[in-house]
Length: 482
Image 1 (tube, rainbow, N blue to C red):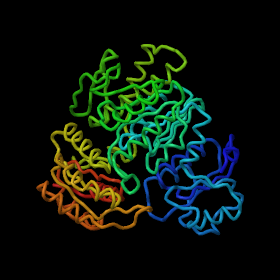
Image 2: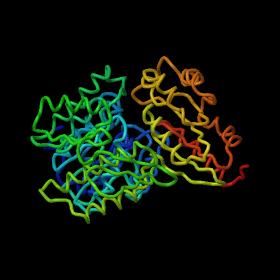
Image 3: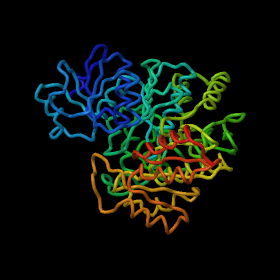
Image 4: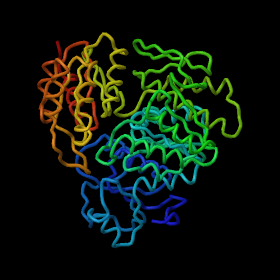
């Protein structure tokens, strides 16, 4: 599809999304909906958390890919990378009708060309960083549109924020180098580690993708990166060797500039930290050291936008940013609090990489020191589980008890050479209390029996085990626990 085919004004444009329940797809659908496009879409019948977001917006979802259900009058079809133009019936039908077809990442890239755009990338941390950046920019009332691959509490549960069309801040994904469709003026790299090994050959291959992304920056572009992350710092060194014009801005304990982390401490209900270039203390209500790093990246993005026109940051703006940071209450499926009943706290988190899991659980342990930590985890994709098996097995040290299930397959990878029991057997070598239930809801009676006052029960992973957390919550609402 050519750039000329992509609408500059979406008012009244009828757009159909194939695979609309995906996190990025649902967010883009909402963004274009708020730009007055007429949106509908299709997907599988399985329930995802995005169903709630789409339903609240009144966006119709057809739970079938039958070609005859592609609406007449559709002017544009945007499709998920999980579906192919030569196999999906609705995409084949759209091509027959000569309806323009564009993949999600290409659509995001074309949107980015029309605004001053910041692409936030990283193997982990990009969702929370994008949500935090949007929350800070919202407080400053800047003319920005923000797209996050999750519902954000500070956006009223929405995945997007639309305050104007001057600036665009978006979560961008490295899988299959999709983020190379994006046209950034600012790039954020939160972390680079082995992941998506069904596509990338090795760590060097992953780093090369991020290097290519950084090199897309225009002359004088800004590259914000986590100086504490070896992968991110290594990629930035390669980029600097090739492009001395790019302004590289580090953040974290190893950073040299104003975003150098000087101190931090976590106690019940708050994480406080100080920075080299700012007086006073910043505070967060979300647990985990990794959230501090995400907050530093978001702060750097916000100040980069303020200072772009040569305007100095005022004390009033800094105070607003600090206030917004403390008011941030998280994202859907990112340390999300489902509720608390009988002194049992139920949470849910999307973390599905060993580093994410380890830092999330260690953060919860520090944030809630008096609670027993019970974790239900469902690994996502066979290739990731196999490639990082030992890392997964050792990532749950902060948990008192771990419950495992079968591997959650993806649309791009339906089977593999290992199973959930492979991870279970390996984890038993490293953790004293680990249990296995093939199907997610098979664990419900066990959870009902085990949970007691003072516990923190968290569902973790990119699978559908979040359903177990909801079922446990329903039980606690109605019953009594010793």
